[in-house]
Length: 125
Image (cartoon, rainbow, N blue to C red):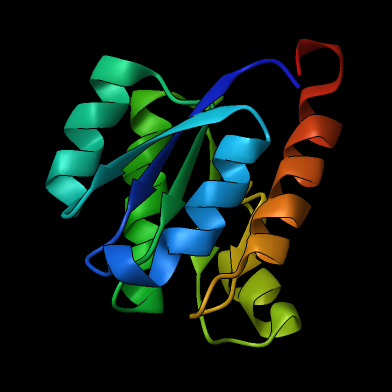
């Protein structure tokens, strides 16, 4: 995959070390934003291909993804959650979220995310 910029919003940067390292091995650059406000500013400025959100609640995740869609509807998103995949899908239906991620993201989760990103980007990836 060509080099892609990914933006990670989290207040837990230490929890993401292996995940971020795997994204970088996959040819991505990774920016970080601690707050969602900083994330929105970075999304407008940097135009990432993907934003990974680590919200404190599912309710915030929904509103945050919606806010990012207003910046760029073509920007892909992934969301950290402890919800089972089926429940997350039902709760977030219609928002076009690429995938959910576990609370403790690992390198293998980054690898799966990159594979999904390649699939949805097709020839652009």
